Length: 427
Image 1 (cartoon, rainbow, N blue to C red):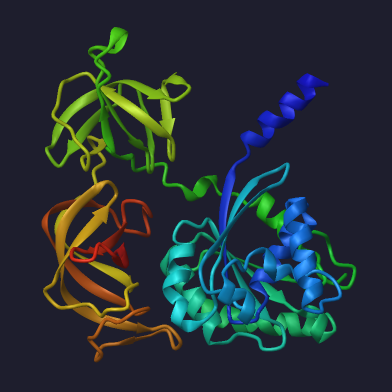
Image 2: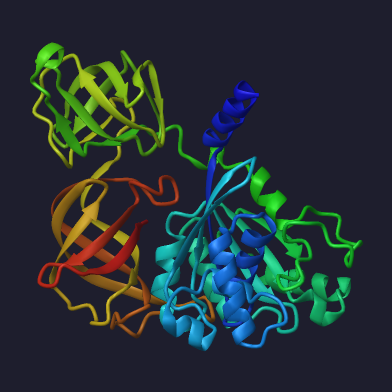
């Protein structure tokens, strides 16, 4: 019995983590959907469930207001909307999940970008009565821009259109027309009712015409291993480990997270930006030494040669290096209340590296509602998504975002306030 329990615990710990975000227009049912997922998968603590049951009764609900599981801010509960990004964790016997419940209002676009930036998948909710609306286009474009590998379009509130197969197919055709203008790789469509629970955790008896899997099963079986770039080895150094005690007196390890690719003992590597080469002598983890490291493992690397390496340097394969550039083009989402100022210096944080940069030129602004470029408006304000040219004081080791999400992304920080003002994707 003990061995069986231990095996199950190990299996649970080794489950692959999937991060997904929810997006959609206001009142499309994002928070209710997540509440249904948590409730039906029995991922709610008893004291939390008891508290929400009392709040629901006080508000006159016959059952449980599922949206209260994620709407944590006072204003959210009063207005019945999502404002901030709400993160929730739950696990099933097959997989662990981190959910980012993002807001639907236009003025909170920056929050949606923040919540979706690390997601493996995005759930885009569409109200079956309204079909594709402006916010559907906006959130789908952002998911495309962020190169989220998997999009699940949940057509919600099917109970309010009599579970109509015809209406479901009409919305699919409508969405596919806008998706054809974007770089969306994998799209799946699921008809659901978050309020009633149809096709969320359990298969719906009201829609026998739908032969696909419910949402939870789709998330549990989604293949995400191939989403990680296993070709380009990129190891940004976070810190240097020098214990200088006992048997580790001469140990020098370069610690960080392997953002992409694979590294093995004996591999010839190059240290950027210096350009020196060496070979990997050991790879250490919290659990001990290993021969091969895969992204996204946290490791410490030792080299055969003594080379001056510090935070911000990058260890890569000798024959597979990122671009070293001081000037590059990027798409940025402006996150700050204050507008961008021309020729103003910002701090860029790219992997573990920090440099001073400025926005040299604003190329165009995206009108997300029409998915068209605005070449005339050159002002960059909060929630704007723009293509810009950035120049740094020293070269950065960069990749295209579409090839490597980790070495192709960055944030800009205002030096005077230390606020994050923009998130960027290198083109």
